Image (cartoon, rainbow, N blue to C red):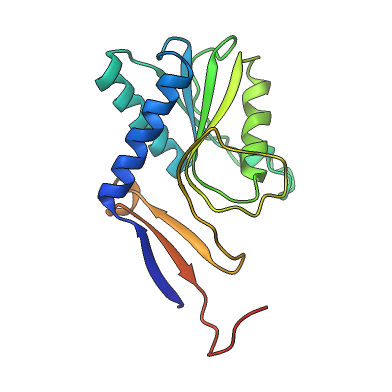
Length: 184
């Protein structure tokens, strides 16, 4: 295993989530007509946390759903035997839909999420909130709300750990073993 560096500790993650929430409220002039859709699995946790923070700040319960992008990915063959784990039990028509994810990398997951949202109705707008933007886009996607911009090399890996799924709260960057030689 390579070098493991903590980039954001629990307090930094909490502050970033609060900042993202405030920015969403400011941009949308409050929480009315805002709904959150989290990409499985850590994006769903992030969406739930933002919804809870909006409830705390505004006293408004925003709709919050879970999105399984697997059926919409362009790098996997269609598999009708795999169950769709999406749980969105509210209309998105004419809403400001905020897609939430943990790490934005190539943008392909976000593109798949946008396809999935549009198939469920025509929202007024689709926005993107990510905890970490690490660059290296392959499609023209840019987040509206970012917890941390983290320039990385393609050989590095960004890992987000959330208490609900991992028992710890942090963002780490992992560099592969190079055996003393730098990888090209």
